[in-house]
Image 1 (cartoon, rainbow over the protein chains, first blue to last red):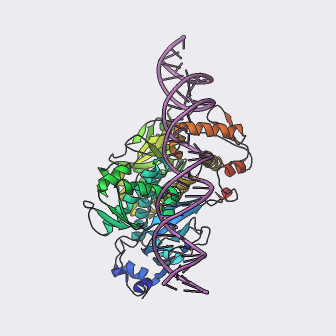
Image 2 (image 1 turned 135 degrees about the horizontal axis):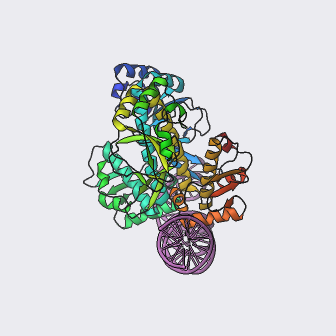
Length: 247
Length: 247
DNA sequence: CGAGCACTTGATCGCTTTCAATAGCTGTGG
DNA sequence: CCACAGCTATTGAAAGCGATCAAGTGCTCG
């Protein structure tokens, strides 16, 4: 049974992202309406979900896996501008053409709606519009956080920042605290990390090796990371470690 | 008569940002409600309008002048994360504490609302909530555009990108096209440009000198800029000059 | 006229990129 | 079963770009 098939006949009540997605505020009636127009799609790691410049025929939520938004310059330089985790929304109501490439970084399952019906539903359902505003404001905050990382942090701080963000997200999903050591798998290749951080993949590799050599992180294989001391990592990220636990 | 005094007794119908601000979609009734709770505040260039971490007691729109959002690290490195032009909205409904410093880059006049009454009005006025969603999505696009600039462009391309954005905005406000030469005043100091672009002010100065020496721009004084050939500038910015005129 | 500020320009330093070689892993086919 | 291709990642050496440190210009204002 494929991952997608697990979702195909499930209903919204049981959805793993039910409480975080664009539908989080919806009541039973509204959910029923959404249920009637939703459909699932799955994408393999590496696949492009939407091409920049394409007509956008659907919007939707990431249910499982990780997708990324990227921009590419004519000469091939690319910058990731968004990392889409489960519950994140893809697409912009009211816009015809996709402004960025959307790529599946891991295998991805999305809960989709054709754009027109969704827009109509949104116009009559303040709960959806309100939730979407909230999520967009959160994304804007995240984007501004990244502008500081991109503009002012050193390569080492950039890597530490990315690791600390992934660590915190994993801790929040798995409901474990940030007290003891944190263990997770990197969902990104070195190249994807470089694209996110505005670095080359060689620099990413070197900085990860350095953090490992100095005991800030431990690696098993290339992707399995242990962080013995979160406070230490956040110092390396240049963040105020006092504020970091508020998330 | 101060700039602020010009607005104090004006009504919304005559407001210069009436058609672009958060109130753009409001009908006469809604405007009347807003009118009853609005008040104007003015700030001098250099003044801090809101401190990061402060309680946010009001939200509002920039009516005249330019403000900036900035983040500062513990060691003093700062990154501008938003440039607020007339009609841009300040503040986040539903949030208690300001996440960024808001500073007046030039003299600024704002149309303010106490947060509580505004939030209540927003809950009952879909026109406002809808417009705010639209504006937030636009800001998110702008932030992502800047992530490409910060992460992947050279110093020269960064400067050219900033100039081209200011030039386009000025052309759109003054209703002149982008065909002939474009003339405008830089609203930012070299240091503010550096903070926006993730550079030092020396590098900003050097790159502006270089663009001037090569005839991409002309300078009278330090701030008055002429762009003889917008296509040329956009090439220097690393942008596809085909797409640039769609704005 | 001198202080203060925004800006420019020069010289040097160092971090990140670039170019290049190599290692480790996985899957394929002889 | 092993050889080899293809991919991801690591590591080294050298180059280049922007930062840093420093001096000086031009302007405004008291």
